[in-house]
Image 1 (cartoon, rainbow, N blue to C red):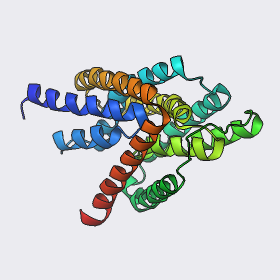
Image 2: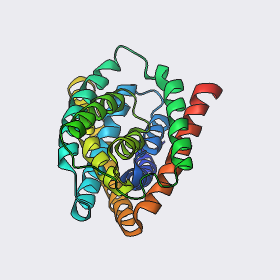
Image 3: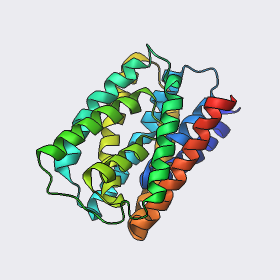
Image 4: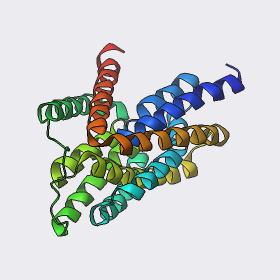
Length: 256
């Protein structure tokens, strides 16, 4: 495939990924398979790192867009981001010692449970029931950040969805507050993973730059739509992305 055509195709994939990721996470579901399809013989670590480079600009932009309209719960987001930074670094390192595919059946089961719970609980994330955040909330955020951060550095699919669900279920946030908090943690996980991959594998910098611009455009559009249409729109997008993730992981686990 010619380089120019390849850049255009991957640019469109990054645009759509940025849109989806800005609303509910899950952009890697689109962007990463596109990279693996375009470069079937490349080292997985190279493609993981390039994906992170292309994503971080859009994720950061979405966090800024949300932060202008939705109050960021820094007592939760700050410790969670710090823990996610550490977790993602060690998750990226773990790729060298363990095949991430071993996690597929477990992640598939967890996503099915998340989808069922969200579908049954119609009021989940509709309104905020957050307590006054103190030490307990900070500890929960640390645990969420460390665990999901490690998962994002190591495997990744569904990271944003897991973060949003846990912030709603454990910390009482609505979908918009959970989404902005998830973006803060996602920026941290991307920074850590990029720092590790950049120092240890060769990355596709020119391609990542093009995809980053496209991802940014999608992220701006996605965050504006989420803010305009509110928690109901985000909830529907969340369920849609989780169902697609389930289908993708089921295919990879049982049919490949």
